[in-house]
Image 1 (cartoon, rainbow, N blue to C red):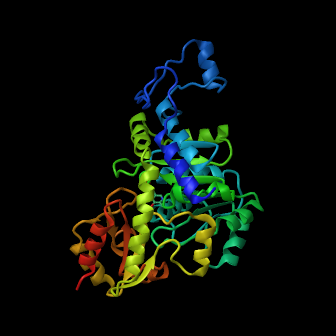
Image 2: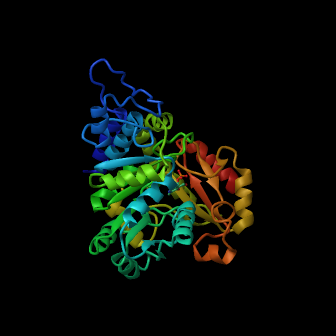
Image 3: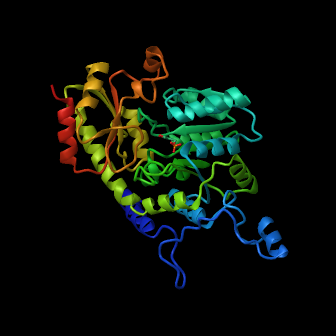
Length: 393
Ligand code: PLP
């Protein structure tokens, strides 16, 4: 399917998310804000608990509104089952737990993974002895060898904040050679720009906090499976406990109605801002999908349809220039996170990566003058005017 057809289809899917009403039901799904459900007779309760008839017992196990959100994310990602979680980190924890259960070998991942995912893996390693191997994917031979020996693989493409891309097809082929599941964090790319299941990935994790909800007002997550969910998947999800109530699920579902329209604007503005920044003499480097070196360009063409609104750039003046830039912005807000309609900027060296020494940051490619920008849906003229002011002498 061409990118044009994909985005048109997704606009239609988004306008109808939540399912078509049957009979005289409301078009917008009801909010089933209840922890408990009437189980009926003893025989009816038995059928629900045994999974013989569809039904709900307790909201941590399942809830009609939460299920509508699971169905919606599953539909956009093109999977066969989905589980909603209370945050993106909870989705990663659940996917890693499921993928590593009963597996020999390490969880293979890469250095420029979202900082919170790194911290989560450190905790799992320290407390439960989870074997974790961190390999640089730009050395493709080393990466594929590690992936081939892995218990499971967790990757992020594009990565946060350096927007590095990882070849999904070769990674999945190598992992499947040894029966390892591949989990792709698709938060930055979103299903609008990248469909990991079409390359054979096993799980997609989403922080719905970002582009899917898109309004910077709910923290949430979701994990989607290429194949059907098993009883063991559901067992792990409900007992890890990072589930949500109906109200949060409903808010994300409501935000997702405009997802495809917002992504068109994020992609357009992100690309224009990245190209503009590349022409500024105060800027030494721009990190944006499709603008990287030739191998990165190849991967972009192979697996992405757009670059999103997320990017990073380095200022020649280093740390002092980055601080001055943040202090001079008037329209763009100095704040963490991404994926809302408002533009946000941070300096990773003093926010997400402040726990590392200068040398460690250098090794991870996080320069002192690096700025991370979540480009919103504002008029491009206003954004460029603010960037020009912030970069000015
Ligand atoms: N994955 C990526 C790529 C992220 O950027 C984030 C948060 O910034 C997460 C996962 C974690 O999401 P949450 O904050 O919803 O737990």
